Image 1 (tube, chains in turn purple, orange):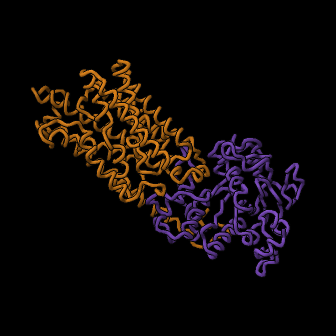
Image 2 (spheres, chains in turn red, blue; image 1 turned 45 degrees about the vertical axis):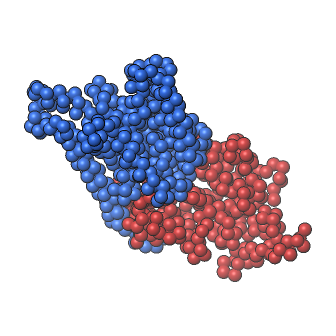
Image 3 (cartoon, rainbow over the protein chains, first blue to last red; image 1 turned 90 degrees about the vertical axis):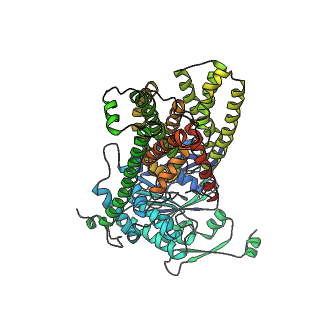
Length: 283
Length: 352
């Protein structure tokens, strides 16, 4: 852990990592309530970053701040070196995509129609729908494996299919950076794996920088290059999953004793929580 | 560059651009059919409204009158009564329909139409206060009515907070009830002569249509509707929820601009024809149902016009011998629809 009095943190993997998206001493909250306090973070370009932490630690708030959904009460979020709130919002949306936790599926909308809406930031007063948009949508459908569902009503799809369609919408936006807020919630293990592998592929093939808030530590360890562990609105540790997921850190961040062993499949850290009696013994 | 060349090694399936075009074309075709069908229907009810009724005008006669030939009796009835009444009905119907559909879509709740959440009543209450308590007349009253609607909209929004949706509808319904009480109180205090003018703000009516009202209304709508159409392009994105919309570059303030335009459209309609009950509330869902559940503002505008004209025809000729105001008929249509909507459970937070 770095010195808690300054609470200044920098990405450790690839020291002084190049970052198009940077949080500079940013404080975020809702009304009077401050959730994230003076947090600094460089999102490493071309990497998959997972943000983890206990419930209500401010990880979703941080993601909302990075996506300019929240205006910081102090500090700033920089995209390509410029305050994100000082840039035209449509221009930001061509660089930075977001898949929120609970998007609303409008009534009667087909898969193609929903995914097409991802092209919105690429249109303007003069630039309307074109053949390039058709291609971008078709690619997003193919990448997420939902081409066969093209004409289906999104309402009629299963949870896993629907989540893939939403990811397809974010892909159709064709941004260099993609933020996802708990994309695997409500998905079973097969669909979680499928989605995370898709994001991993996307990162590998297009070089898309990915930041995702994840609850599932072991999957986060497996798919992320870079990990940010948050606690009470501050960054507790940043680094590679192996650097972040130590027994001490996990205990400190989540308040529960764990054993950390190598994942037999991937070799990444595998967090195994101890029983309740061990928790009492730890006191 | 071909479609597949753009794809990296992450590709899992064939890129099927034709499928995308096919589905998009089908959606567009359906919308065209809805708009086309409603246009034909509107033309039919418009023609019936102008040509039929107590005094039938033949089509050749109608065109002779329109091109300036004086036919004793018929000319006056067409040019000063039937035609302005039908034209006014189309204009306010479109304004109400578009306004209602914007509200229902943006707030994702079919109950959130301006006539239900107190915005139309805000225009009425302001006008009634201006007439009875301040003694205003003419255009000034209309201006006050529009300001009243905007005032109520801003007030409801402030009280509801940014959470919008369900809470906003509940607060709006409460405000509507309070405004109704204000109007009734003032009505009881009005003099007989004033009461006649006040009544126009209680029940919507196109009976008093004349060209001097229609001309400024046409000018206003020629400005408002294109601006609304342009602003409403973001609606397809904002209906995905505030966060997803912001991710796509549409910030909440854009939705507020669109809602403000809808408030003004509604208020302008109320200012010329009174709050014709339930038209904004009915038009959007009818157009949506025809369009496979998808919002179409143009369809909603046309549906609004059809409702007003058809209801006015019924009010004028088909009910007893009395010439009812159109609002009585639309009110009778709207109430059962409201109950049906409630019973179907499409009014809660889960409307998505």
